[in-house]
Length: 308
Length: 308
Image (cartoon, rainbow over all chains, first blue to last red; front, side):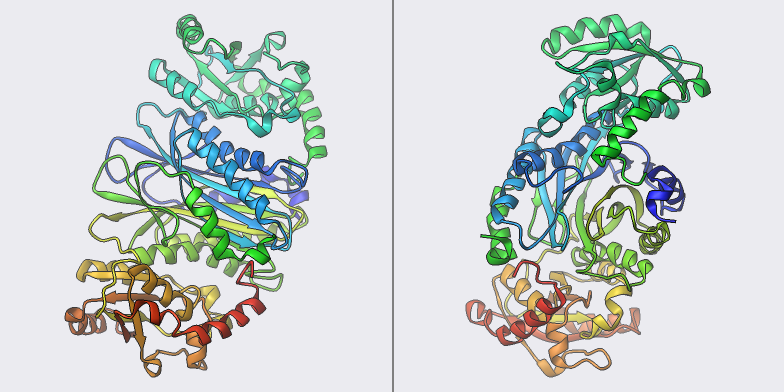
């Protein structure tokens, strides 16, 4: 059986239980970042790696500065989802010897600009050649206060669901120059109790069920309330992916205060209450199936759903 | 100008100064691990990433369990070079959808066995597809006591130079199933003041000049004293690479005590005094040039010197 036949999820389901895990791991593979206990201090160490691959995530016509920017910002978006502060990045660049050095320098320019945007230090890396498409892999480590890290599994039935920004149509450009919601996320956990959070990288139609499943709850969305990017339709908001906005759950007792404070703090960035968690765990997992199917078609076409 | 024309070293020399660096970085790109300051505690956080690429570091006939083993052990060997304790690993696997899931599972088996050998937790990772050769990238984080980490630049003229194990001929198999000298390295810094250390991944002919250059000293080697693997000749010890043994500098005052203690502690692993650092910094950099040239031919043939 090859990976195409097996599918990524089933592959991971087979691989994860066999992973080597020892003391000090608070959350390993399966959440946005790995949460680990540093030897001393009250902070947790966060670790995350992510990569972009030529002919999959970008092609020869994509501006390499933006490719580098995106390669760095993708793992940083996972830090936002955990309300962590990224600090150190390692970069792995696997590239053909035929590639122009100009292209590589532009990749690094994008990587460095993105890192500097959030005070992240690029502390090392690795370069290797390949006879195939280029790969840019970025690993980031950082910290989060023990009482501020937000996992995917703390949501409760009745929680209100919010998204930052606008959804859909990211492939027209935003997916290359997005800014992870780290400042917003840090502000959220400083001022509110956030029950569960995820960054929308695969689209609401995939990431919301993921968040609900982890929290063992169902969900209910008001489709007409979804905040849309210009030119995007509801279907795009559900299925496009690569929004890199935050989706989070909060007690309805805090919702009004949140909306008021948010408007003062981030007047130019919308925050939208799109629905709520409910107790219909099993049933709700099928709700967005139709939308997800169309998303999958799109993803297949784009090459994002790797092994299906 | 493409990378082949530019060469890896010149590429890095151009890239490194532009890396984004902020507070908390004690040693960034350029040493075996990045050394960074965790927010509290007396330990330093070590970060290292390394990768293996199909058709470069392995091919379709290589046992995938050993490919995974090697992919994990390579960055761990850098921890040995710093006397650090590795703790957490992130794995990135970029692979064609046509690849059999059996192959991927074996890769992970090798990765997990290697991680477990040193109590390293695999805390996450990333899988992506490619239309080209497979890439396995491993990032490791860990810690080292402030007073025990060993850089490359602390060597002094007059220091004795030691290597662990035997050199040369690694490509006949050892390069796939080697065990990094972490235990030995930890024992060394617990009991001795190690001035400078490096793991021999590119061969003595490349790594010794590197260590000397970082320490701003020259060196003098007794070629006939080099400890050789069975079937290997002096040329192999200098030029083959992938030995993954430790090369370190220590005050000659400590050498006799070291040799005696080592024999009691590691009776089955040779420790050999191969020469010493001297003050002829500039001149000595040319000493091994002939040997290095033959090594380069070999590396070119094997595809290891990536962009030259």
